[in-house]
Length: 87
Image 1 (tube, rainbow, N blue to C red):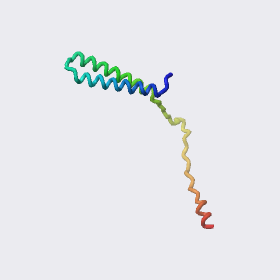
Image 2: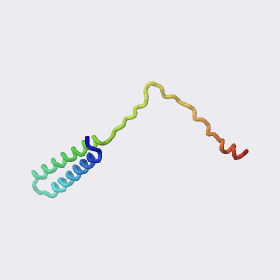
Image 3: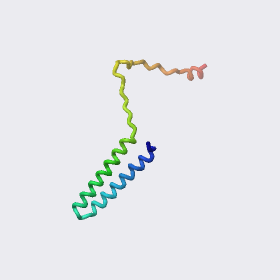
Image 4: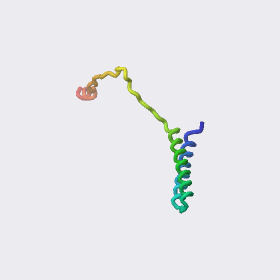
């Protein structure tokens, strides 16, 4: 498996290429070529999104549903330092 830094660089490269093709598509007057370039843009964006999903860690925290959570009283803060000063 490749290190995450390589995967992140690959995602950045795909995003850059998508932007390059988008810019070229905006400049062309041929509708067929423009649509083809926009299809390439969509493919690069999809690759980048899938790449981000594969390198982004996900963590799901599920609280216990068995009633094991209990309320506890918070103890009063100790004032031992103040007691020492008064002595």
